[in-house]
Length: 123
Image (tube, rainbow, N blue to C red):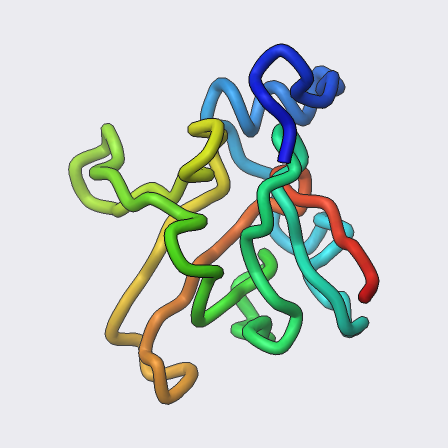
């Protein structure tokens, strides 16, 4: 995991999402339909976020996970007042939003994550 002074340099699109809390257009992200075994890490600080075994196809247009690594993701109220934002617990980078009660999986949770907020590492 990288310290702040060693965070990865972000492209303008990555910065728009991770720093300025933007979003990708649905169905355009690299990891929306991704099926390989591995781990998804924060694009900015490389902290482990999600296992590929927790990824599922929700049909929403963004990568969806029903669980994260312990203490990897922090939930904060979104400024829109309606949703819960998820951020990297290590660097504070915007990941997306969390939704509960949709019954997509037995865990009844959907972390809806921007592909540009993550990198995939094959294990």
